[in-house]
Image 1: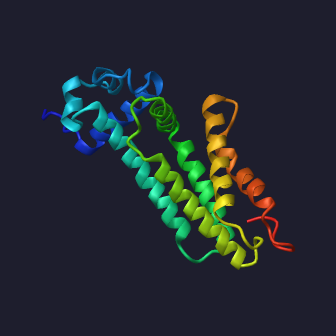
Image 2 (image 1 turned 120 degrees about the horizontal axis):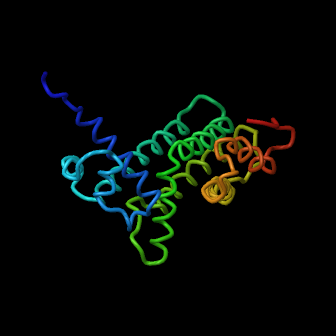
Amino acid sequence: MAPKRVDREARREEILSAAVRVFARRGFAATRIEDVAAEAGIAKGSVYLSFGSRDELLAAAFARLAERSADVLAHASAQGAPAVERLASLVRAAVAMLADEPDLTRVMVDLWAAGRHGGAAAPLDMASVYREYRGAVADLLRRAADEGDLRPGVGEPEATVVVGAIEGCLVQWLMDPGVRLDGLAGTVVEVCLSGLRAEGGPTGP
């Protein structure tokens, strides 16, 4: 019988998923390639066939998250639905993206904290991520105001609060197993927009 051929891309994804689980459980700094190999159930050398180093594994994991984040932002900027509805969809999609990747989200937060204290920084520019989301949210807020759904004058400060609300829920979810992140998106939208609605405007996105 011919040996079973392993799809290289599927193996790469298996290794990447195993690495993220170990990074989340042990911490990136404490994780060795041997740990990733053991988690994936393969030999150490097999990891190196797909990834040259631990840093390369981490960068690949964040690249996957960055691609999904770009899709979320692109969808929000697409024309068609009213801006307030696109804003609600953006918040829900961002929350769903993070909720779908609990281990990688934990690694991201841990590395951000380590970088703030002189440790290794995450291969993802969090300041740029925040700027992109604030910009997208601010644009939708302004458009919603132009469409009469929100009061005039909303923009960057309010966008900062919306993004901060998502991050605050995220941190609580990571720290407290009793918090369900995937059920908070609608609440974030309603709480953040309740004080911004135009008089006589709709009460929900």
